[in-house]
Image 1 (cartoon, rainbow, N blue to C red):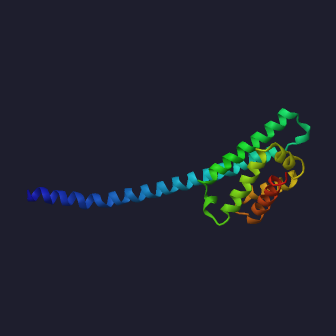
Image 2 (cartoon, rainbow, N blue to C red):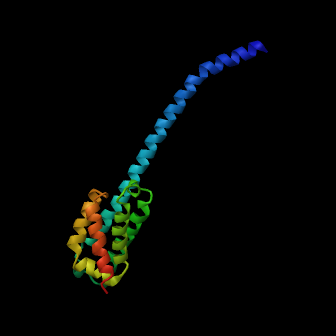
Image 3 (cartoon, one colour):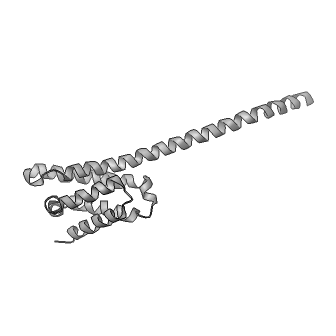
Length: 159
């Protein structure tokens, strides 16, 4: 029995360093995977904003009613997707998250209202484009987020 205990202790002493190495390697791999997943979510978030901005850059007045509806609903869908992705993005954990959410949410609400979307597409298209480009480049751009939020809020309340 003593011999068996001695063998067990020897095995444990030799196995512990290997187990620690495996645990450390596993932790490093999982951390890298988490960082990669976070990066992909952040990229998906900004890609949805790029898609929405692409719709907003079309000449609204050159489209028939069906084309206008397509532009509006596609932009709204991309904005809605970006709002949902924002919860999981790294941009949800910063001081500017309320401004960023407000800007995207109000633009989304504008796109879901035919009168507000027409105003955005025809009157404020250039400004919205400039703000979105800045937000896409840097979602933490507080000035661009606030400006887009205020612009879209005023459009929503101008009935």
